Amino acid sequence: MSSITFHSKTIDLNIINEDYFPIKVEHNPSIESTKYVGFYFGDTDLLEFSVDRETNSIRKFILVLCNHYEVLDMEFHSATVYKRGSISLNLPQHNECNFFRTLVYRNAVDILLSNKTVHSAIKCGQVLFGLSEDNELVSVTVVEMSENDIDHTIEELSQGGGGMTNN
Image (tube, rainbow, N blue to C red; front, side, top):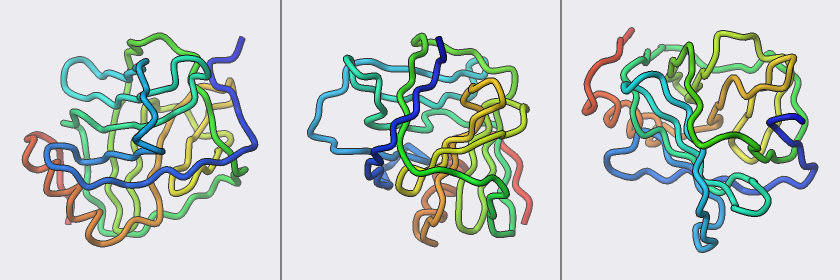
């Protein structure tokens, strides 16, 4: 059974600039989501998804901790052809990553959960979910971000310490 399920129906995922969180993206915050799926890199980096208990469809995700990041003075351009839709995460609550890196571009934030190549992608609103050839979630990219969104992300990342900055 695959850990990621594609749905042709797309949902709106909206960027929320909130203190203490470099990236927070929500879909319909009035719906209670009670199951959590986290991608951890030791105790230094964490991307946490809130999913619907019954369908496992994504309701929200937050970059909670991030000590491995780079700020790049360039635009993000996806080389991967994508299809529009949404995904469900049929994964355990705790997923340890061998690799975790956040790349902040002038127009996007790319959260790499693996060093595997993105084989295909699903675009859901302003979010690209990158999948490996064996259908693992390997990246989450928030695209078409405003200058204000990027500034907020950089500010929150710098407040958390760690990371590498290239200007």
